[in-house]
Length: 292
Image 1 (cartoon, rainbow, N blue to C red):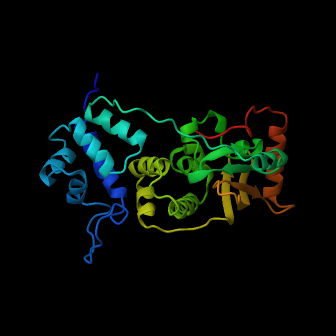
Image 2 (cartoon, rainbow, N blue to C red; image 1 turned 45 degrees about the horizontal axis):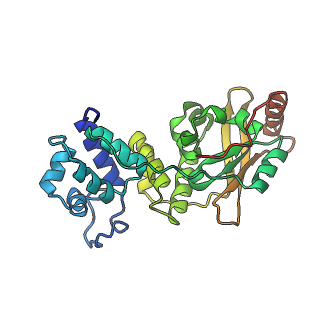
Image 3 (cartoon, rainbow, N blue to C red; image 1 turned 90 degrees about the horizontal axis):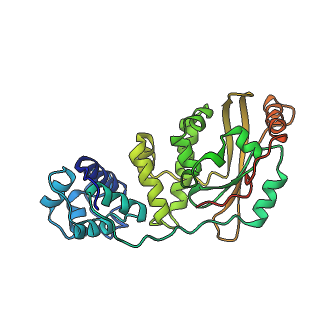
């Protein structure tokens, strides 16, 4: 059976999705005149979907209900991944009979796993494509959050920065750190801008957060291999940590993110407290997890 249609949400999703798309990447001609809207215009989506502008406008306004064939062309025109297509069908109140493809997991490199096992006194994360969190050590859990309790499909560094109140509140300079993370994802996206998982992440955050929409549209890029982060931790107070990231050279897109403090500094002492706090605790699979 089909679900109940939600015309307003359906139209909002269409508007949000077309705002995320680059006209050139969609094969549209370059215009010499300035664009008044971010992303694609209504008429451009209608052209790509082979439907009339009037009909597409009424879809966005929630005045008509899309048929299954129209949903198929809209999904192709808007470059929706599998999850986004399924969501589109739900909003339209249509049954999604498409065969569902399983996501391919990202497997942690053995060398990266060994490094995490050996880093016992400093927070460390193994990041995969699109800043997915593939693994972590106990001190990273003590600093950030219980990653094992986060659903696998939400276990993403950027997603947690924007949607997890505890992680967001940990950063005393959240706007700066979040913008740097967005710029890092934007730079990574250049290698595979139409990747379905990237589209899902960007689509979700674009809908959920106005700051992300603004910063993503600015197209600022940053390799983000090193920097300084400032935290306010509920247990040990303020920390100033150097953040360094090392990328694997095997094309996997995996990187190791390590946070350290100047020896003898209050932040160094605070990390020792966090490490000792986790020493007596067991955290099964903390460095054994692979992402979705």
